[in-house]
Length: 213
Image 1 (spheres, rainbow, N blue to C red):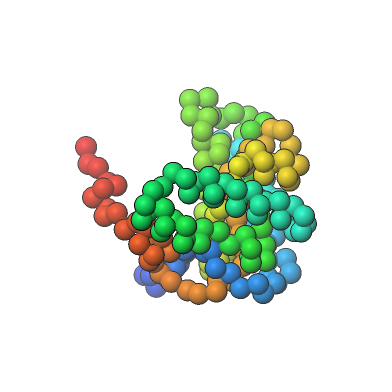
Image 2 (cartoon, one colour; image 1 turned 90 degrees about the horizontal axis):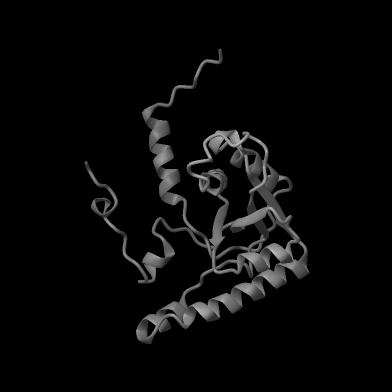
């Protein structure tokens, strides 16, 4: 039996720092990342928990210029549609926000859930089938922390037509897009979320999220 590690107060403080500095990055430097770092991040991401040990995550590196351009154009179209949902000053503010790093991030990584995976043999999914994509979200967050620990930033782009992106990347029929990530070195460093910094949304207090019964 392997002896578990001991996590002291210093480690816990550093972990807190990691969580604080883990931000959604939209402004990237164009510097190329070290060779093999994306593969290393994926290796750490798949240490995440998954329902019934299903391991349903599937990662696609997107380096082909034509495919990247097609994804970016899809973002621009979806963003124009989203702008129509806002009016007045809120619309002006929305239009001023930078909501993706697709134009500068050196790495794009699409993360899918394999809905037809046989791994895990269905344990834990009959009553809550949504735990399959939730498991992929756990892997995304694990990758995010692993990247931040290496001074690498990650941005999650959700203003996309998931079916169109799936077609652009020629993903298998049984896969569904969970996250499209931009990865690279941040152009600037902040502890506060960008949407809070630019006045889109204040931080909600713990009291709005924690109930006691």
